[in-house]
Image (cartoon, rainbow, N blue to C red; front, side, top):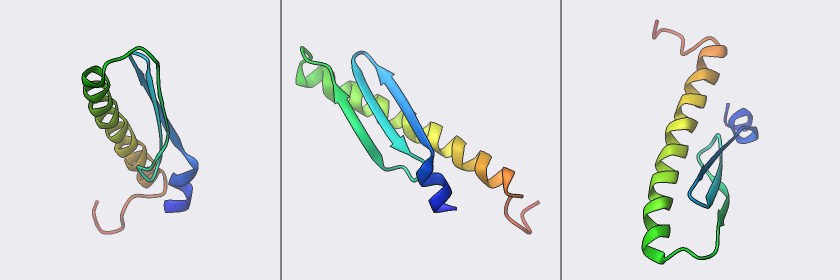
Length: 74
């Protein structure tokens, strides 16, 4: 399961910052546009990471369902 998720990726972009996270919730890329203050960058990165985690969790749930779910939890 982890190997299949590692092949998936989620990309989230907001206000000049782009984050790519794989299905194992590992950040594989973070690109920050020039001209932002550190305060702006800090807030955007927190928001973007939280969005990426939520999308990754949805992806994991879809993968689990497509593989038949967890036996005994129906």
